[in-house]
Image (tube, rainbow, N blue to C red; front, side, top):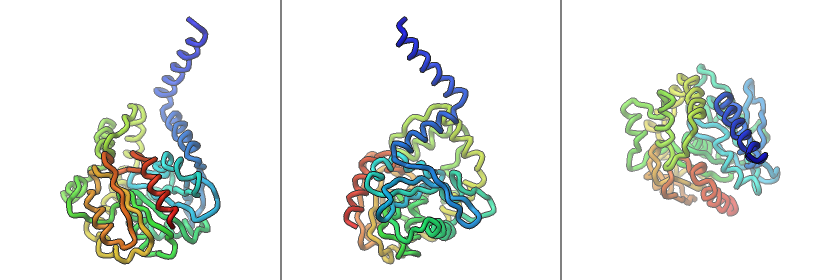
Amino acid sequence: MTTLLYIILALIAAMLIVYFAFPKALYGGLRNMLRRRGGLVEKSITVGDHVWPFLEGRPAEGVPVVLLHGFGGDKDNWSVYAAHITGTHRLIAPDLPGFGENDRSLDRDYDIASQCHRLVAFLDAMGITKCHLGGNSMGGFIALQFALEYPDMVASLTLFNNAGVVGEDKSELQIAAEDGKNVLALTSVEDTTRLMKFVAYKPVAMPGQFRKLFFEEANAHKELLDKIFWQIAGSGLNDPLNDRLGDVKAPTLIIWGRHDRLIDVSCVKVLADGIENSESVIFEKTGHIPMIEKPKESASVHLAFLAKQ
């Protein structure tokens, strides 16, 4: 057996040991690799009595792009996407309160209005008076309402499969929520496979040890996640922003996946018809998270849109 083969086998053995014995460390290493590839650095800032962790990518000049993750997500939802953005735009992706490494207190409210007020405080602390704001799912709901409440702070708005509006057709999540069921709640390690298939059109297979970590993280905050889900779902279904879309002043880009099972693609027409200065793109064979499922294509559309602002 050659020396090279010994080295290769030793490396494989080492990776297997790390995977089974220290999966969290391995996951953290992969996460950090994606951050570096995306030109992102992890930072934090104190806002009031809470610390906001966020990822930031340079250049420093120009109006920053601020991107908000969806329900159950965190700032790293944008790491792969960032690789296509940070070459030309400053990007900031925070952990929203209730998620990631931000404050996850059960005694706080996490409705959209409360999150908008917290986002204002975060941007003020960062010295940002105007930004290109975007968000996916719940983050898109927050971004849309923020654009309505604080129009002078939004240079442009980009919505990735956002919640907060009701389309002509109901999604599977909407039907379940109206029946009192939260289909995003995990019941077991094995259930993570169902959730991945539900969220993405063609999900990447997640290794077993990583699925276990994913479930343990969700299970540790099960009560909080359930509370947030029903606060968001309640306002999204009972008090959607459909009738306020005409008040959106910011140029708006709508990006959607044709096969979204959480928020139906019929919402695109509602948004496009309601927001006067808007344009939309629907990706085929794409689910709820186009910035992860089709990062290069989504970023290309986004960059072309930003170039016009």
